[in-house]
Length: 306
Image (cartoon, rainbow, N blue to C red; front, side, top):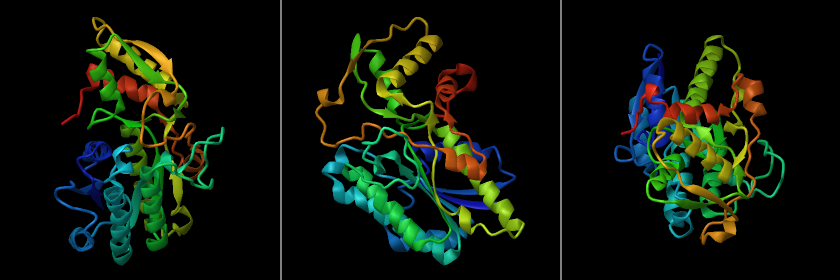
């Protein structure tokens, strides 16, 4: 049995991991912690929990991810996104566990036209991105057995996300202004969860074969493909909504520049992530976000929201 400790268990990715790992109960023993059950910014509480769980893997999905509020609640953002991973890294190193840390495309400034590879120099534009980058650096510095996964624009049946916000807006709006100058990678949380589970399985198998995993402990990008701007993303959301509820009148979409919206946080214009490294290393293909949207809206698949 592979013992997995999960933080942020009630978040979007946390719920996706709980669902998919429940389908492999014969392989994984999952020990989930919500924020109420474990404050990762509390160093002693983290160490106590890790000592109690004795995990093979720690997956940290806990995060402060309100990009706007992070500009004014900067201390809290760094407490969760930098101090939390630092505490988990210390505990993982002490217990010789592997720490899987989830990060973001927002560590980049979005000024280059090409998709970002893992070795490109991070230069975050906002406090959220800076706090997540600081978390990455703490994990790299402290925990020798670590996997950092940068992802982007995550959506799913679980929790709160951009897709659900757009569905809610559809009910009461005849038209919507949608940004068309931010290009990125929508990512289905189910695919991200499956990728994480795949990585844990491969690392465990190699360990059992007494293989040296040192070169595999690294930073990887995993996100959706094809790349899309926000306008194209919303078009796809409403196309799926219309297909699942033909009687529903969806809003007319009006493309606008991001400068149209007042915002405290500066967001990267082009934050596409190249995923060839995770494909070449683990054989994991990028998320098919369009298939993920169809799965989310298809009533035959059911929903897992709570």
